[in-house]
Amino acid sequence: TLKAYVVLAPWQEGDNTTSSRLEAMRQLDSYQKIHDVDYICRIYVFKAFNLSPRMHFSSHTCNPYLVIENGDDVDNQFSNEKNALQNELNPAFYQVVELQTRIPENAHLSIQIWDKDLTTNSMIGSTTVDIEDRLLHNKKTGDKEYRRLLNPEYSTSQGLILVRIDILTAEEARTTKPEELAPPQFWDYQLRLVLWSTQGIKFPQLENRGMDVDQKLIVTANFDGEGGQEIVKHTDVAWYAAEGNADWNWRMIFDLKLPCKNPRLTVSVWDENVLGSNEALGEVVLNLQSFFARCLLERTDKVRDKRKVVTFEHSNHRGTPIGSVKLEMAMYTKAAAEERPAGEAQNEPNVDPYLPNPKRNAPPWSGYTVSREKSIH
Image 1 (cartoon, one colour):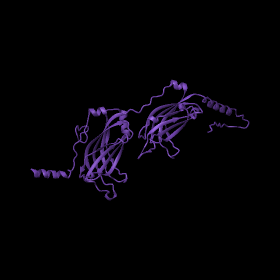
Image 2: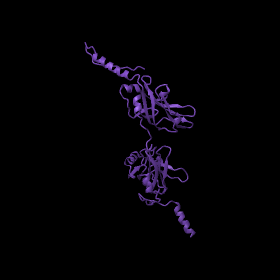
Image 3: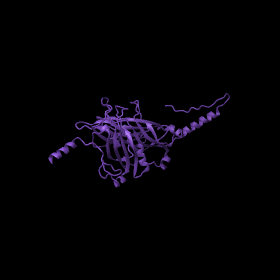
Image 4: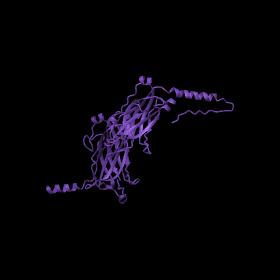
């Protein structure tokens, strides 16, 4: 590898190019000043995102750990293989690593993420930082930066890593303590979702398209904020929902922590099948990121999201009218939720808001029950 300065300067006939020579000498002098100096390269590693999974037995996942190096000596290498994380594609490392550095021997810093396996560990991806170039451009103190993780065996990025790199002299490193890194603090909240009603629910399939679902409706809500820890709630069954309309007045309660990885709530409507599996009619994915951010920003006991109507879609039938659901949400801190509890559905305590029993058509067995009671008496 050749690294050199090229100085371009205007030239006229008879010019002895003294100014150009002086500039070149100044540049060479600045290059020589960074040589034979003991530096400490301080690397702050925060998180990695969307790592490419590897095969582990029958599943695709990742057991990531860090490898950071800028040379072959022990003082120029770091690995936390012993503390490899398990089944994590978005690992939070929050580590500070310091490596001894001299130029040009340790000019290139390699930050790698490896996957730990029972047999052979493999590199997921790496990013290389030119420390010498940063010193030459006086970029000794860095900002947080997202860097792509590359692997020569793959043509695409294997993920992103968020880091900050400071280059300090040995004296600066002694007098400047590294900043403490810690994962973000999590806060306990309770999300209360109220489903008021569904309107105009129709079959999305071509053979039944446009037909009202007038038999057995059920609505579910799925929250999977951390991935793999989903919370699923469901309503009761609305029988004989004329023209696909049904009142629910149904409260669903989700205990969760903020911030979360996946601030999304999926609300789905189904045609309930007594003898088999339910048929999915449509769903809507609510992005709660801005709502959750407002909760963390305001830090009040309760944050309410206004009542709204959202439409359902079916992934295989985009653009087909399926119907809508009227809902509203409120977020409570854990302390406020304990002070002002509320029951699911219309259960007690039925408050904030009060939910009356929905006006529904009776299920088919209710007539049989009444007739049987009359015959007994």
